[in-house]
Image (cartoon, rainbow, N blue to C red; front, side, top):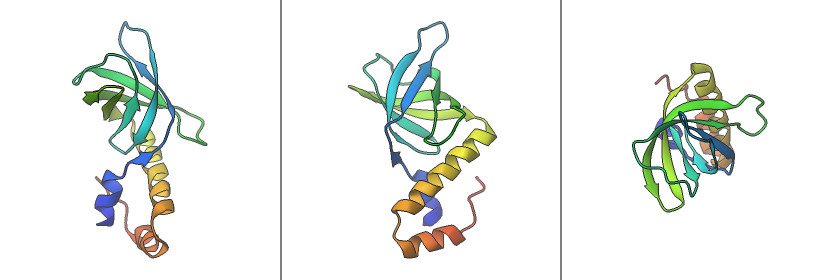
Length: 123
């Protein structure tokens, strides 16, 4: 159960995000939440599901930005869902570690203790 909780955990956070498209101006937007596999963004830019681009964002208290080749999964007025298609192993590990820390902070203590004992998911 903990492995599944960690796998699908979405942390609500507002971060500046830059969308970088080939031969197009960058789009500045804001994250609504983030998971190991993608993020929800708040933007008024006219983007459509299936569109590919790179997102760039920096986690709080981290120096280097994370870059991820991404695809839009869903779009509705003012928001869109982004799936990370390609992210370096180092940055993926950094994101997973950060998310695990956030998950531990919101879990009840007895559950968090079990979470800390569980082996990391190797997927």
